Image (cartoon, rainbow, N blue to C red; front, side, top):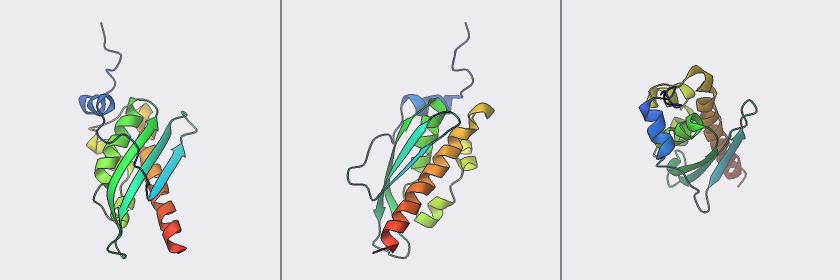
Length: 135
């Protein structure tokens, strides 16, 4: 009998079943929230920023809450690992290709899940920068 998850590789399944970065950060410095109109997935990214170096603030902690399929959850988990410890400028350069590479591939019909992660992280960073440029 065929496994119904055969289209997902072991890395995607591991991150879907046991994500390390899921949850919410209390009193986050920024929250990105994007809904994918194509499939209905909803992703939230919470950032805690270390801004001791005002010119190069760094992502101290990042967590996600995603309502979606295995690919969306796995992409969110990888995204958090890629972003943690990076400056905001470095984190802005994280793209869906890097997420897919870290996941060791996604089925072509699920590539939009990695784009959702990229967009949600950028949304959180833009909100943080806007909030901190006004003060």
